[in-house]
Image 1 (cartoon, rainbow over the protein chains, first blue to last red):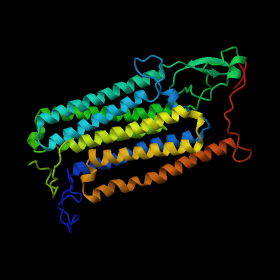
Image 2 (cartoon, rainbow over the protein chains, first blue to last red):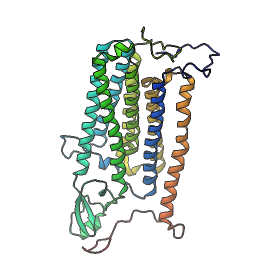
Image 3 (cartoon, chains in turn green, blue):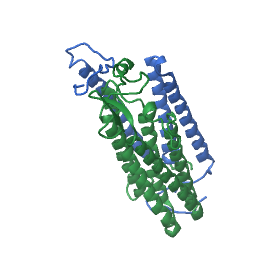
Image 4 (cartoon, rainbow over the protein chains, first blue to last red):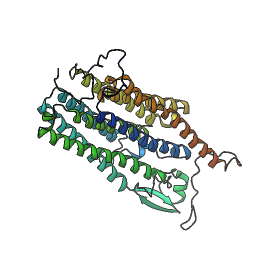
Length: 254
Length: 142
């Protein structure tokens, strides 16, 4: 798609037409995405503030090193990369669905919408596994002189400053054990809050995509004469992918 | 290519030229950018404590710039903002410039809090080594 060749001197604000050469619905979707971008941006930047304000923060390569069915293998970044590729791929299928819509090819739109929905569900499944793994984890934490086993939740953060080996041997434990002190409690709140808010957007996106698929199959867009609703749903879906790119950056990569 | 009409408020119908080639090309670009980011991430993980603070910061900044590049491609090509009228593009991009100020201000704030905490609001010298607790008996306060 190329930029439309619009004659110079077009009076955009004279009334009677859209000043952006785009339908009301599309412009409003963009405005909504702007507001959502600022919401997510605020969450992520406040996360950055808190992370900068403490002396020790969890090392993401230690916290997020699990992979489904791989037991206790140390695979930092592997699972979250899979999730990133799933979302990127579902974004591609969404663009292809929009593209098919421009050609008024109903079968094509149906095919690519199904693939996009499957991608979204796969991502949600991965996120569910990640959450379960985090919450049910058993990490040794030294609390008031006692070793407890903690998962990572909104009230417990087992990823604080590691206990030095000398202290461990003094307590009668092996010096190679991984025992931490409790970390900043904000970690769980931010992790589950932001990935949860994003996951909720993915869920609502999947629901919207399913509705779009059903409407396509019922021929509503053929009747209407255009598939612009698919395009608007596509904008939302790409936004969800975009937010994930930044969540991936802030939580897992840096 | 298409005879469909959108709503009547759209004056100039978009020309949907170009096939799926461009879409797949951008998919590969995004994948390549992601792989480079992951490579740098692994570099940071592998080198751990043996690289200097400045190297870590610069690597993280490079990763951040790569993410911005990904964001550009997704918004411009996948969301078709690059094909829209210039005024609409500006409506979206210009307010997002505020994020530059937003990020700098709030990360600086975070640093300032850390300093204030460490120095007890400037009254004691900064002790930022991570001090782990000495061996304690059960029942002692941490």
